[in-house]
Length: 322
Length: 283
Image (cartoon, helix red, strand yellow):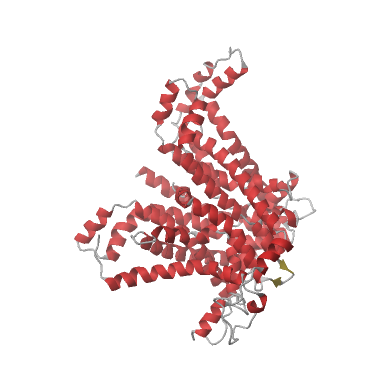
């Protein structure tokens, strides 16, 4: 990223003197103004800043205020300090949701990274039909999550599960597996669906990273006697690390704040055992109407997101500095 | 090339790749089979002798017919399309201008502004939906498509700005300088010289933004309440399940039809989409 020269920016004042204020027509004046770099930048950035300010910065401030108040649907806000956060902390469902969110994010990210890396390495080779295979691999990522999650829900159906049928017919199980009717199973099912959906994103971005690696490096390494695993570990992985870090950060943010997958797959059930922070915030804030408490619950995602973003920015800066 | 034995190629390449392809595509196949299967076959005990779940002997289009005729599905398709196109257009316009300013112009706070746009890119919608619902109501936008058209850019603009900024930086500065020497204004050089060169980048950002807005769920779920205003993902979730009963045939038909438009757009522009995807994570 380009950074302004510190101090130099303030001394750009003489430019404004050169504006053609004496212009006869307004059109000339406008063109003149647009020639000024700072004015042009202001004009070009205004719509973006306005929209993001109105629908991100302003709601963020409102959200902080909500979380410190007892606002609910139809009732005005009164300041209550940290009461909502204390209440959430003493709420066993909130604790479960927080734990679930961390567990879900951790395992789903590990699986997506491992499988995505594997798939990227496979796709990096030459074979017939490579383009169509690569294109079809991205489908889970393209299709609306809600809709594909419905297909999974149907595959996990307690009575008609095709997975149970297959396992039963092949002799792996004698009784149905409780895919979504048991809390632990249901969370693992959600992790599986999330992995299925997000793995292509890892694979394709890592593949793009792999394609920038010069094949000479691999040949040199294999001439030196390095086997496949050593070539990956000592040649590919170090070169792939920067893009991996960025992809992992994106994925952690998406997974940690996930809503739709759980909403469709389990709805937080059975018995509130699979709530994530976002689905629980929805249940309290929207379904129950306790806006203040709901806002507090969703703001609890912030510290984790903040740490992740901070690590990423630091890492990118260090790369730029190197 | 590293030379390999044939069995090794099977074990380390063909078999894993086949497993990946099957695992990735099976849910879609399952969607399709369920959608064309008559109800009598759908709800048959899994231990029944004549159960053949992987194919159907009496394919039917009944679920699709019901979906198109008896539900508001066509209306949802149109709503989704309309909202996705307009919000993508707004985001591209903003992203183009902002991306150009951040890539080419010198002005105070440029670095800070760039960083803060990047940070908003990382703000997930689920962090803000409760206060945002209140704001949307205050602005009298509740239950209108404009609630979504104006809020989707919050996650589309940062991404398109970021992508296009990267693209502009790859265009040599000399092109603009030549145009300026020939008498073009800054604005003219931007719109007539740089933007046309950036068309592939714009296309990438546009395709990516379109798929993101087609897939968006939580804002659409909260901001829209009347059935005829809903988008496909929300309509399928909230209107096709009556009470506690899941009509799986119709649900899968809806899932399939709701996925096809975005899959079509994607299949026409795979390369652009991939550029958008990989560009979206480049620092």
